[in-house]
Length: 451
Image 1: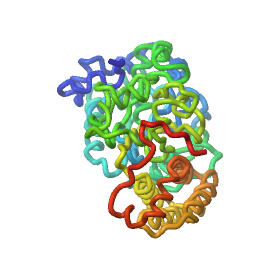
Image 2: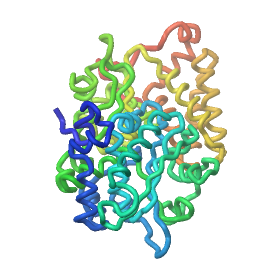
Image 3: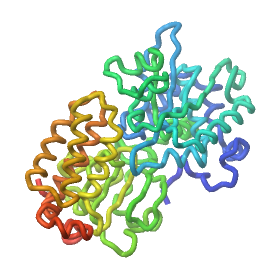
Image 4: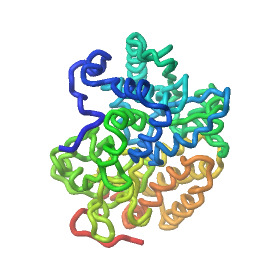
């Protein structure tokens, strides 16, 4: 069994409440940080831990904190990104639902480290139960004297507010989130300036993901160096994974980074293998925006090394033969699943969620949806496959925010690894309508990768 830092007490009755969370050692990190550490000490511990952002980008958290500008007489803000909208990802919602005080404690410690006296938790608007849970947890914490004015008699003041979002995927991008938080349309900002210099209300701001902020608690409790001992190389600590698709045991798992992907898929401790006795066909490792991998590249890299659940190992080989850890949305496809249909479904989502600010994304996602619809519904041609490749290539890297890239990467990877399946849809239009395509790229035999 791997070590659990965030979900150790997840099954404890009443862990949602302040009293039970406190009995299990909760808010020790607040006492330690505020009473015996300076803000810079907290930042230094997070740097030592090697914690990387758990929202998708994987940028070192301590380094991000150190970029925060500190002009005299100007407020600073911490904003928690709880706008979990990535298809296949539900681990932040799970954390907010079942152990909300882990997030509140992390918010207090992180706000102290950053010198923020007002902080916000921005939660996707559809998650009203989670919003109510967090508001209740904040009220409990405030009643206990661990939030508000003069916390623990240290002279540090902090207020935390929960803000419902508008249900827009684009608001998961930090500058679009800040625009929405200010009451504006959630369009991404052009950078620079970056939020660390001019963020919320034009003031220095740090935006971190729910899991990233909650992870600060064990780092302060145990020390950054102890946290860094967990995991492998630059992938330190534990990671929450949302496992779904065709697995026997879907759910949220906390893993020590470095677990082999094959073990995560097939071990009874985690996913338990492929459901209904089927074979593995493909995997989306980090939410819908990351490149899909065929079975022959999931458990081993192109060099034959075991593929590990780390930022580096999943990315081994670049987008030609690798993928990304992303948000940890682990979607498994069995031999009966249709890659063309799945890619079309993802593209429909990105077309719908594009804010329309950048023409490559606004127009390109629409064109990709239309072309994939044609191929999936027996109306496509071989030239349409080449057109798809050309469209995604012209979207990637040509937009203000990463949504364009997020829409392009799944299409590029699907064609790169499963072009024969796209061609089969074109050449067998009637048959492709009557059943799923499940003819290639099984775990055995291993097929060569199409370059």
